[in-house]
Length: 413
Image 1 (cartoon, helix red, strand yellow):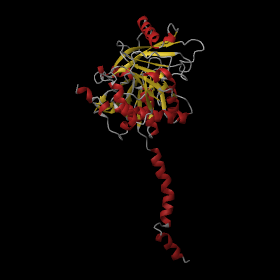
Image 2 (cartoon, helix red, strand yellow):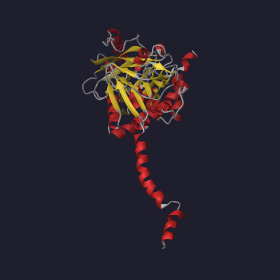
Image 3 (cartoon, helix red, strand yellow):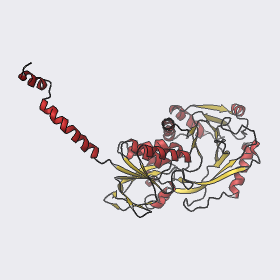
Image 4 (cartoon, one colour):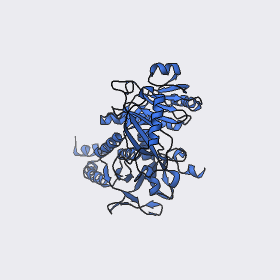
């Protein structure tokens, strides 16, 4: 082949020798420019169920993330603290939460596998329907549409399966086979460990919101006297949201005092361990629920009725004599074998309630780079990974705000 032919050959293929030489020099320079471009920085305040998962999914989306918490993930003041939480899909006619539970279950399982740990116990959930069972009946087609497995149990069938329960004043039951319970404090800690191992930055410090100027917050003030600057800020501070943003949040989130008790089953009695008993919910005169042995901790019982207003920072967390008596009276009626069972442990936690018990996932009305994720209202923990996934998409602008969770809904009341 002649020199002329060789010169023409690369040109015939659409690329010249000179272009090849130029690209050999230019590509490394281009890569250097791309790699030196700073990532968008998001600061997430609160390392509980909502904040931890939001930080993790933002990080997995390629964002630089700083996660901040005053006392650490799952601490005893936090609404995400304590040992366990229920995960169930029965929400009456509210398909939004049932679908969110289905997504959350998928994400809990995926991350368990990724981290080689156990956070979700598939014990099933037994939901006891009262005489007015419209809530339960409305839930059935929604559970089915969401792909959550369940059974309808007659009282005879429920008594046969679960002889340790007295089913007086119960009409029938839903047995959710996909449901169960989650480790709470442990999950918050493992999410943080996963976040750090994947490249996230964690700082334990208290913060205060900075000033808002031209529809943007510029920085956060830390308890140590320094500042944190980011492009976007996500406040997932549970019961402290009202304190940090009194003019915007105010009474849209109210912390209430809630008591939880753990009773001891008789020696050698396996009927109250999770191998023999599911998580249970009694939707009668009150909404009372419980979790079986949960890794030998004791038989958990709690009343979902909202307690008195509570200070999550300095509130006294000693259980009340009235609360202990009410729990004993109930357990003697519904679980006769546990009458006079010893109280092994107790805990005072808090809910952070929105007026309609729906979550709040929305932008600050006066700051385009500030977001709120809160209002768990006693049922938020189970949704954690699905909420984090949703919040990350909102911050990144790939999903619209859902009216179900927006602040605008309160203006219409």
